[in-house]
Image (cartoon, helix red, strand yellow):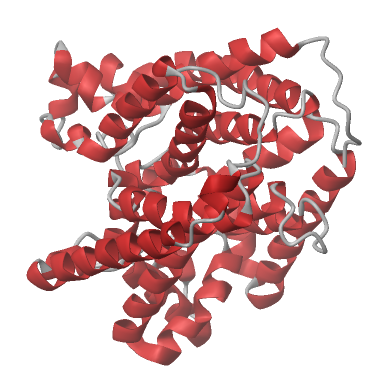
Length: 411
């Protein structure tokens, strides 16, 4: 994968800016894509099961009744609530409106978050507003069909919303919000974004990092204010219990621990080596992100931190990899600006990995992952391998920027 943001960003050519057809065509493309998605849901209602949304609703209902939040088992899969208590507070509107409207609202929020993430990435890349309007429509229309995005919609997950919070914070939109605030809130709802707090600290953005920590602490205090006993249970036990979440070795866990567990024949055999590998990847990735930030390559820095967080997290389900969306946008932008064939090939490979759903074409479940050979190992771990390549390339890019001085003030 070629470096992202190697070429200085320049405005879109005036000829593009003056063509209103770009905006209209983008909106039509997006409308067509959303219509196709709606039809797929109508024809295959199981795509609208939204099993995680059912867990969210049930957890909020239990919380409102004063029940045991972490003793909950929902649906035939006996799923448990695995988020911090503050997330259950956030979901408290769901029992009020009922399951049907919750599904509709959750889907609408996710689609709007997808569009918002594409828009923010394009504007962060300094694409002019008028061109970004049309390009957002085209990009969102296509990226809607990436497997992690489809999985997020299918399960009724909150990944796109979490990613929107992080991108909005790092891109400083809206600018009146204190930097770090939205990242702290995102980490308080789902722990994986906490990698961005570390990134802010290492990048020298001390004030933003402290703000993020303060916002995160506020979500923890909110949980204690609503349900002190269950908050204590979560932060002392349940937050560290990966067994509650699911099988670490299942193909859907596209993290380094998942990859190593599949190769080693089980999580216990892999955990010791994983701690060392995850620590190395974490240090390299966060330091590379910080270096890219200091070189004024903030988009590359954010994507490096995101991929690093997904790799080192014990659990990174396939739907957590919605960060494939801004990576694809950045690669497409770099391909167009630099007229780069390697960047274009990298974009095609990236879209093939995250758009094909290839991870579901290998033997899976009931321990079949332990018997993979040859191409099955590559395809079954393709998200992890793509993330490793991305972090490695961006780390090399960061190494090449050492000694460069940014011409801006670090916030």
